[in-house]
Structure formats: C-alpha cells, structure tokens
Image 1: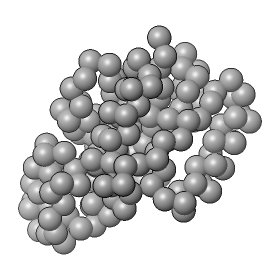
Image 2 (image 1 turned 90 degrees about the horizontal axis):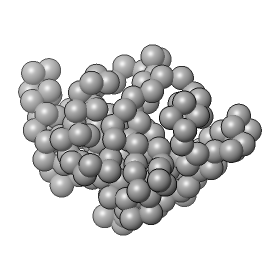
Image 3 (image 1 turned 90 degrees about the vertical axis):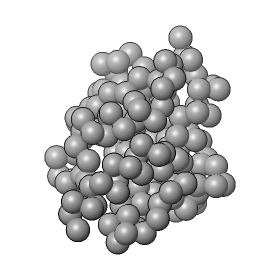
Image 4 (image 1 turned 180 degrees about the vertical axis):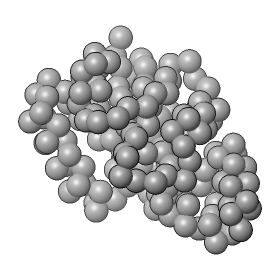
Length: 160
C-alpha cells in the first residue's frame, strides 16, 4: 500500500491543506496527516482539537490523523512510511522546504520527500494568516473548512 505522511502544525487546517490531502489521495492509497507538536510553540488549538478538526473536515477512510513529537523521520520510520508529502505555496517556501528535505535525507536516506504545489485558489493562505485575520474579526470563510470556521469564530469570540 502506497502511504505518505503529510506533516504540519495545521493550526488551523485550511482549504489549502485539504486541497493537498485530496490531491495526494490520487497518488497514494493512504495519507497520514501528522500533526506536529512543538513544545516551543503555543498553538491556538490543542493537539486533540487539531486532530478532531482534521478528522471532521476530511472523512475519507484513506486518511488517518495522528500526532507526533520529535523528528519527523523518526516518526516515519516508526510508522514504516518512506514518503513525506510537503505542500509548497510560493517560491519563498521552497528554500526552507528544500533544506528540510535534505536534512531528512541525511538523517534517513530511505525516506523521500514529495513536493506538491498548492492550488492557485489557496497559494496565499497560511494558518498564521488565517489566525491573524480571524483574531481581528475578519472573515476567513472560504479559506478554511466550515467546521474550522465555526470553531475559529467561537474561540475568538471568547477571547474578545
């Protein structure tokens, strides 16, 4: 079974992320959406909230949602997966992603990174930008799945 790991913070999941997942399912039999947990960052949504938002937005049985701590290549090895899927929005993403891919190859030569361009409808959308706009009461409808929009609005209504 051809499986890819699609890692990210997904804080929150955007329609750009969903586009990558849906297109990846045309290339892979299974996609593991792996929520990265970084103890140095304070996310808007908890690990469990992010996992649930992804599960609710992406109800394809070929998509598994998990979380990992530590090095991605170690997680991939534990899961027995040798393909990492990364989305690219713009040329500015490429340099950083290229560095990560080469470091991962150095750490685990048997793991390959596959890059997929984000669809033109979402190339400017990032989780950080969505959080920022939503925090000021801006409308992010159409940039995130409906379930994420609802939770974002509720979270910022409580903080406001």
